[in-house]
Length: 363
Image (cartoon, rainbow, N blue to C red):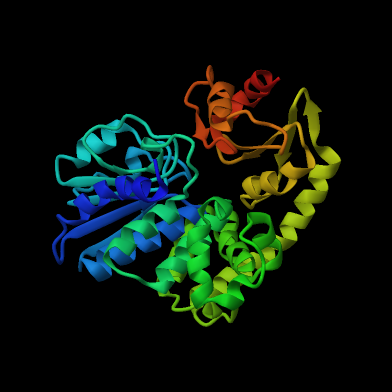
């Protein structure tokens, strides 16, 4: 299937969903915590509010990659959009469908959800890597061209390491923000290391690393308020200043954790395992940054919260195993566990008393 055809098929359910929204209708967006989630949420928020005149509210999910019924507080919502969430119980859709219509905008391996509008490119091409921010922008672009929405799409796509596979939006962005991209090729690692857009992603991503759910809410407010990227770099408003302060603290803590990882990591079989001890949610960024150093290994970084362990999985450049399936296998016999993700990046959550069982499964 040609790319343009894939995009059109992907966004068609969203176009049907938005066609039913009238001015002043209530729209609620439920989203995850990471950069791709908040960028795609900001795009969907702007589309519903500015283009369709809806009354829009947002809810950050309890966890980054999943939704619980408690997240919605028994709300009766006319139009609900779930953005970049891999695990949503069907019972939530069944209840929401009693009051209105439901749209999913996502890029995780699709599930057989019933009675929802589902804009996910993997429904049509299983191996495509097209972050949710890219999908959200293509939906928005159907109605209007907007350089800020294009910027948000590129920020979320780069944060999810999807720039190289979705280079068309970066070529478009170059026309509006040449200094932001610089004169480097559209390669994720190069953009992170040698461009201002990489620095901007790092600043905004610090929000959910530092504050988890509350940090994601701050970042979303900043992206909605931001008129141009210089406002973030220059602390031009309250949320921008908060983001820069969080970024400074995250950078300091990351250096400490990286040093501790190098000293205390353990290796068994093809697994490199490390448990973070930190108040900040650093597991994902640590796993992503060290994976290149372990060519034939799978990286498993665990971090304990109140009553659970969260685990991030990444793979070295020589590993081809699907980590989404790997995560599901790792928790297969652990009660009340959840997990999944993409081929190259996945996550799991288990009750804290089962960390030993998880390590047995990994071994």
